Length: 207
Image 1: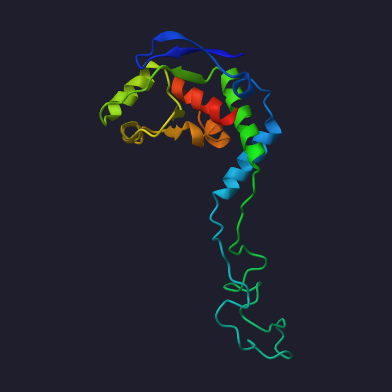
Image 2: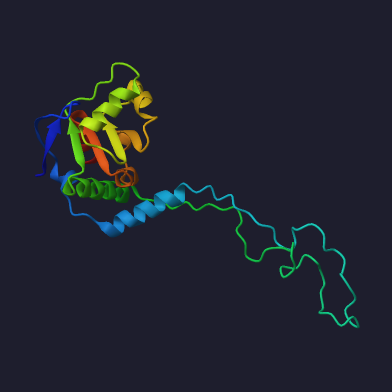
C-alpha cells in the first residue's frame, strides 16, 4: 500500500497517509494512457476547418480559350485545382473528430495516471487547504513553500470559490474537484496537490 507524507500549507510535514492500492498503486498501462490522451485531445477539436472544391469556388463558368489551335494546353475552367485560385482537392471539411471512451477505460486510465504520479514522487497531500479570502499571494506562497515550480494540479473534495479565484491567475496551475478528475489533467501537470479529503473522495468515487 503506497504511503506518502502529508504537509500543511506552510510546507511542513505533519504526518503520513496510506493510499488505496487499487487506485494509487496499480500497474501503469502506458498504451491505455496514450489512447485516452489522444481521445481527449481529439474531443477538444472543433472540426470547423473547411476548404472549397472546384464546384464551390466562384467563377470558372466559361472555357478560358478554345480547345484547339492556340498552342496552349487544354483547359475547361480557370477554377481547376491546378490553377492559382482554383479549388482544393481532398481538402478538409467540417466534421466531428470525437472518439468515444468507455467509462471503464476512463477510470482505468485515471488509476494508471495516479499510480504513475505516486511512483514518480509527484503527489503532494495537504492536511487542509483553507483560503479565507480571495488572494493570489496565499496560493502562490503555499506553492513556493511546497517547492512547486512547474505545472501543478490542485484537487479538492468540493468546489471552493475563494481558492478558484485565488489560483486562476497563477501560470501553470489548475484546479479540479476530486469527482471530476481525469487522466488527461493528471498527466498534463507535473505535480498533483490533493487534500486529505480529496484523497478520500477519489477513493470513494473511483475505487
